[in-house]
Image 1 (cartoon, rainbow, N blue to C red):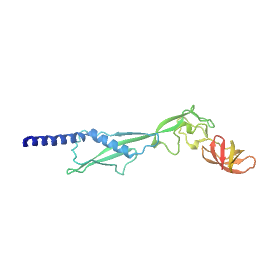
Image 2 (cartoon, helix red, strand yellow):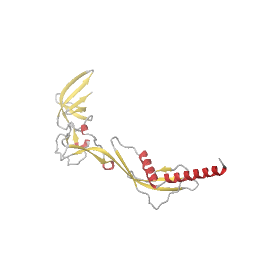
Image 3 (cartoon, one colour):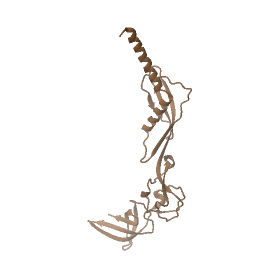
Image 4 (cartoon, helix red, strand yellow):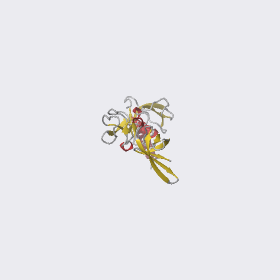
Length: 228
């Protein structure tokens, strides 16, 4: 191959590489880069759904090709909903830019499908599972109806209210319960009265009807408490 051909081949190769790099650094590429970076930094709750939306870069902004791998980071002064992703080029002609990214995480929560009166039994007929913005949920909640069915409403629940351990009870105060005491491999059952409200696996005080003793027991089912 002649020197001229080699020179032309090399020149076209350099030109092609620079052009390719410039194409890779267009607006859409950087927006997608910021989106993927944020996605990698966020821990998504179980059964949650993540939505990331980048704000389009001003079309008047021209992006210079970068001969070094781009550096990405998220500055500390941001909230969980709006993030500015910093993209930096650290070659001999350095530059940086910020791409705003909007983030929303929705999680499944159990809500009252309709108005639920105090003392009503909770089941599929009056409950529903919906996706809620994680920033709108506070305290404890449930993400499946199976977790709360057979509980009772401690107070009336308006339509749309999130169901939490504070407004339901699997064993309710004043109810008759079966106390199951296990000792040395023997199981003894007796009648009792619940002195507190509680949900599954919660420890409550119960009164033994026969002896009058007040003891602590763990809720294992509706109106059923175990003592070890």
